[in-house]
Image (tube, rainbow, N blue to C red; front, side, top):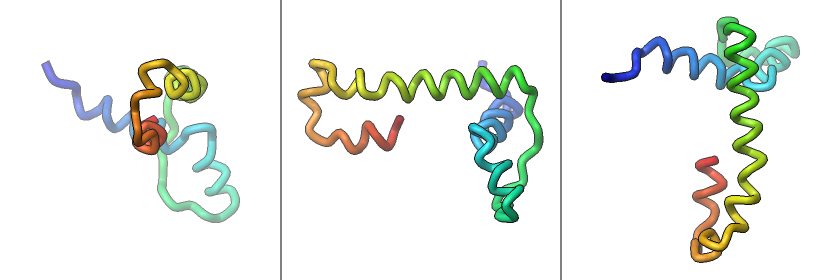
Length: 79
């Protein structure tokens, strides 16, 4: 079973609305990308998951297994 395209579209819209950055840019007159409003609960959960993942990046990079990784820049770019 594949993921419907609507899910990917919603994820894209929520990524653009992340922490109201795009709204602040639009209010400042720098509207780069037009976004449509997302459901507030869905957007709040998305922001929570992203923030939680960002909090775990230092733990992931200081883990014993992470000490074996030579090029950690890729980890920073992927997270």
